[in-house]
Every structure is written in C-alpha cells, then in structure tokens.
Image (cartoon, rainbow, N blue to C red; front, side):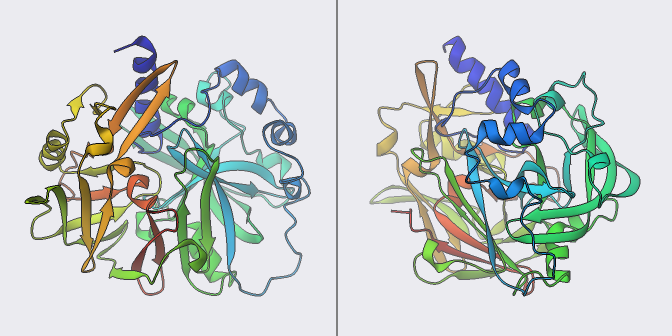
Length: 415
C-alpha cells in the first residue's frame, strides 16, 4: 500500500477515536497542514470566521448571534450541518455573550457537551488547531469549576465545568453547563470540529451536567421534545444536512416514519429484529439472529457490531483487513457487491453497496473501504450494533424524548 494511503488511514484512525468515528468515504477537502490551521484559528475568532466562511452567510455570528432579547414563542428550528472528509457532520454554535462561534459535533452517543478552553496549554497541538472558548470575554459566564475527566484509553479528556449562554440557530439556551477542556488527546488534532454537544439521555451525562436538549425543552424553546437528523452524504456537496430542533421536516423524507421504542435510556438504543446480506437470488445470510440491541450514533460513519459477525460480513464482501481495524475491497468490483438490509420495527431498511463501501482518494491513490467495523465491546454491550452515517445517510431519523421512541424513514437522497 502506498505511503499516501497509509498516512490517510492513520489520520482516519485518529479521527475515528476522536469522535468514535471509524470510517471515511470520499474526502471533500484536502487535509490542511498544522501551520495552515493554526493561522486560521489564530487568536481572533472573528477573523477565523471571516477567513473560513462567507461573511454574508454567517454575519449573525458576529453580533451576538441575533438572538431576540425576549423569550421566543416555542417553535421548530434547524441548524445547518457541514461535512469534513465525509466523517464529521458538524454545526455552528455560539457560546457566551457576545457569542463565540465554535464548530461542534451533535453526538447522540454522548451526554455531556464540551468545548476547548482558552486555558488549554499552548503546548497542546490539538488546542493550537482549534478555536477556543474564553469565559473572560463573556458577560454571561458563571463559574462552576467542578473537574471534568473522561478516560479515552491511554489518553484523557480533562477540564472543568462552566455555565453560560449557548446560541443555536435562533434559539438561545440560558444557564447551560458544559465542560471547558484544558487537556485534549492528540487524536483531536485530526478533528475539524472544535467540540462535542451530547444528545444522549441525561443518564449518560457525568458530573450532574444537564444535556443541552433537555434545557431547550425545559426552557420552552421548542414546540415538541423532538429533534431529528437529515444527513447528506452526497460527496459533491459540502452541505452535510440539518439538525432539526422541535420536530421533523417531511421535505427530507419519503412516506411516514417507522417508530421503535427506546429500550435503554442512556444511548438511543432499541431492539433490532435482524440484519441480512442478500448474497444472490437464492441466498440471504442472517446476522443478529433472533434480534439484538442497536443504537444510533451521529458521530460515526461506520456500522459496527460484534467482531465475529462483522468479520463474517466482510468475508462475504471479499474485504481484506488492512490497518487500524479497517477492511478494503477491490474498487473495480465494489458496485457489484450485494445489498444489506436491517429489519427494524417490522420493516426492512436496505443499504446498497454504494452506501456501505466508501471510496477514499488521497495523493492520487484510491482505496475502497468497508463500512463494517468490529466493536469488541465489553458486557453488557458485546452484542450491540451501532448504526452511523453509512446508515443514517440513507434514512432520516427522529428522536422523540417525550415518547422515548425513534422514527425512521427513507431520506429523499436515498435511491
């Protein structure tokens, strides 16, 4: 394998750890050098914003996000998502007053929210490459100071809790507690997003922090306790989709939603009926036989599952193990691979080869990767499947916090 492809796989492996994302499809941008990224972030967030994105489109970021001074009538709102290397789907938020713009991943498999702190060490490469929140520049900051510490294998995500205003779209969330991170693992140097906003259940959050969507509902900022995702995996577009707060947008899906109940109020976990590979007209092979637990993870592009079953799927696809837990297939035959479908709520949700085989191009070389990755989770999650953007890119998903259910429907881009 060429050095260029090895370098890309190394970067992708680091990125998958940073956001628990394990697979990349088609890179939409060249990876920028650390010097370029440091020049972009600098010390002025306003200069970063002007340099990276059209000012006219994001002019509302510079004047306090344009949030109304009175409490708005409960409504629905949407936040545009952007893509980085087709692995991260992130949006913009503003923290503090005046709003400090930051890019964050809206992660259904996290409970807490965190952003890099201006108190992060200048000797930390990931800090140098990302925008940072400075609570000294916010008139609405409230000190909390409780330590925040999350182990990430051999590294640690560490900092302290703070409370401030968070602006998202046209919504202003008051008294939102999040972590200011002062110690970022090196793997975050490969992440385009600055931080993470957790959209898991409150039971998943540590240190007593209330997830931001809970606060949105509590403060009466949306009509219904529902959020939903439309992910756009069209590699010709930088538009990554939308996060909808307060409901769903039927313009982005076909037909009606199929609902399943949440079985564990930590992750957005449900019972999947089965998974199948339609090898040919006479052969369909089953996995997750008799049903198994599954969850939705908006921070990853892979579909992960028990190692034995995932290895078997990759064997059926003719995929060969290469590095960092990744498998590749012959690009010349990738389009001829069989359909895969997941049985959820009594319906089959189909993925074609173009959905689960992801073509990565770098330095003039191209490699086709399987979206199926082994999870190797410890009990009681050893049978858990996690469906990331390889699945979510085809199916619009609604997360109903009030009724503890998840809805699925084919997105309009699916074909």
